Image (tube, rainbow, N blue to C red):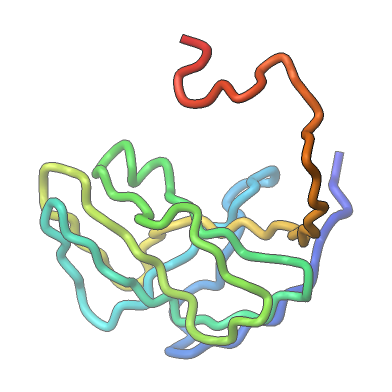
Length: 150
């Protein structure tokens, strides 16, 4: 059943039209693959991190963010992931979208122009307002934190 929950996002190409715009790879994908706009190959040695340009800038509507997440295939095959995952692109940011990746793998990893390096998920944002109180509603969990379920 098709979803009717699209949001229009303005996008500007910054370097060349050869880099695809972020795109959904399957009909029901939550994330769009996003592509590297490096000028030349970049090699990441194990443990290294690098900021990869995407060649685009976007204008999200107020109340939305773009989350940058790892691609599962890169993580499982090469140990490459997004370092600050999920990264957030705010609605008022107008600079180039860049992806901070790290090589957790055992071998060098090469990023080439046009490689799919991450996913972008568009998400609704809710702003919080704080209500001061001296008592919080109790729950069965209470203050059980890290490892509380064994």
